[in-house]
Image (tube, rainbow over all chains, first blue to last red; front, side, top):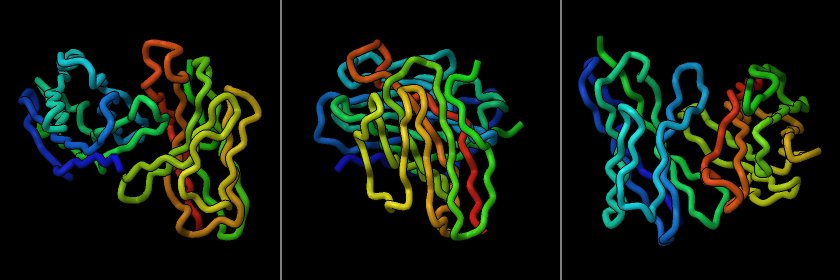
Length: 114
Length: 117
């Protein structure tokens, strides 16, 4: 069975600093996608970044980047120059290419300290 | 323009009642989903519909019945509500695999917070 594990229930980072959120997953599939979603207090689920497993290059979206280690089944999210608006729950998620459903980790609550 | 919308955003009701949550998407997607987020923030898929056909039906009590009148709508009807049904319910949509560059990405609605008293 596919699983997604986020081992950090909560993290804090000083404003303008860099923080890395960890995620590991387990799958026997070779073709899949990985995502990071952000859920602010408004509870809207917002896609932050996505990565195709067949791509070796790490995805980047402005201040957000991932470190994708396929062999280790690791998919961490790095947030540079943290801003107060980055405070939210962050969910790591996995989807096999042949499947419609997304499997979510339990989330990491990120606090930004002014 | 709202891409995926849900109504209502908040729903408070008594045990035993029947209620519906509506979902609409204007993204031209042909696959829609319902997820449940419990009090510990854990998100889990409940149903998936593709072109009005049920594709995924996870282990969900049969008191929950999704209904898709067309590709743009997927409503969730819940019978005989129980205390444990209290949660936030998210609708999402995506393209079918292979039809567009971002078919893997699901877009979520704002959620409906259901409270059963």
